[in-house]
Length: 210
Image (cartoon, rainbow, N blue to C red; front, side, top):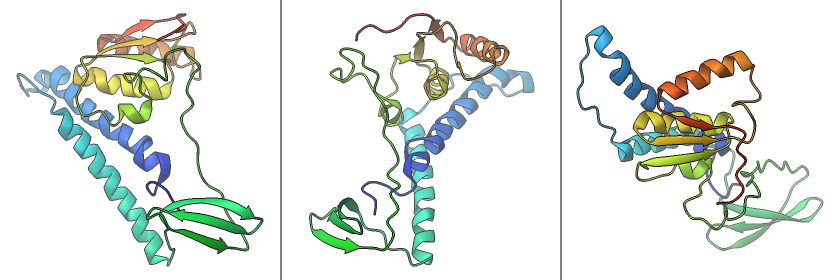
């Protein structure tokens, strides 16, 4: 049973949609920065952001439909809804249509995944302009500017995509370097490239409040 979409984070709000945005961003960057070198001149390149998002959604939908097809082919029944344990081998299932069904099974696999953690920054939760990675993948309009709190992989992936689309990006990081999980020499190369894209970085700058 699943309360949202098949495929979990990766297909719907993680790896796949992020890579779709990055692919669109890479094409924009190649045309703007490298096109003239190979004889391709394209003045006034414009990003149709709603179409970028529509393409991202279409790719995710295609892949989740493939997962649904595999389940059906293997005679796996999908129930839209949520479940809670009522005993060691019993579940109470609340379906998406509002009905409730009791189910029993000899073995029950709990694979509910996780949710985004939210840093304890005062004002963050209350501010509607503060979004997580899921929100950044669901924007309807291209923002003129964006502040990314945290210099980790996910934040910088999205920052690079939006910078290529034309958004003014500022990254705020509490540590004295970006991408702390990577080798320092690699990080320097990456940050230098991101600065060429126009991104600004504020290091050793923990956010106190929003």
